[in-house]
Length: 311
Ligand SMILES: [Zn+2]
Image 1 (tube, rainbow, N blue to C red):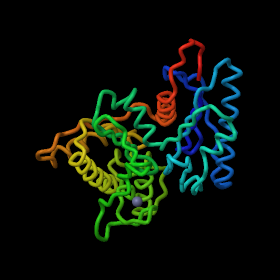
Image 2 (spheres, helix red, strand yellow):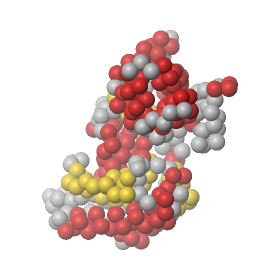
Image 3 (cartoon, rainbow, N blue to C red):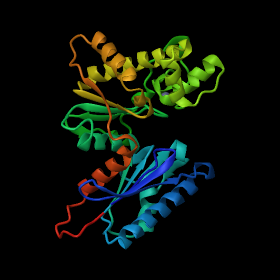
Image 4 (cartoon, helix red, strand yellow):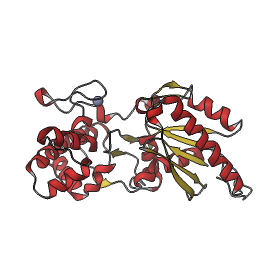
């Protein structure tokens, strides 16, 4: 199948076989600066060209999976995605027109697709109650509850837009609310808050983590704010959903145990009666969205019985 992930700075695209093997992968620019129509045209062109490549390589395209950082209306196949400038954009209808009849199209939210991949073949394998929480430019959760990935008609999992910072310390979030988890604990927030505090421009969260390791007190301050809000969020989720495992992903998990151990300690100290989850790093990295779209699409397609190799 053809998989395209629009969740990152560049489109991640691939051809994925029924067994999850990635037969081809590439990245392409996402022309956000040219507006929503240009992004959609780039997606259509990518899907058509990858389908042609699959055919030329002797495969049969059985499904198209597209991962988007936005709200998908499952009924209409329209997508709202602020950072792609899509508002009620008829992505499924446009793909159907471009590809022709008969090929199933699966649209999936980027974080839920990533969570599905982690559930099926990554850090959440074997769990029935768990969460995938990538801490990247933004924060959203893929929630696995009683064995199912919860989509809430496309609206579920927005833990990043829950208020965990109160009083004067609360900053306004891109979503319009104040004090959201994302305003202190995303990778983007760490860099922004360090810059605001010191007047210095840093090269993303990576540099803040380097400063933290070097003993920089301002880095420690913004890091502690992030940890405090994350612990609050994970305790809330643990109390509501009782996960056995939480997999942290996204750019910040590059901090490794510097991030994970304080989270474990903080949660352990806070819980009283609740079931304590394991806190682990996600394992699929940047491929998670594409793989998740592929697995979701393959789930919809009956496995080819004739033995000819299909993508
Ligand atoms: Zn928000």
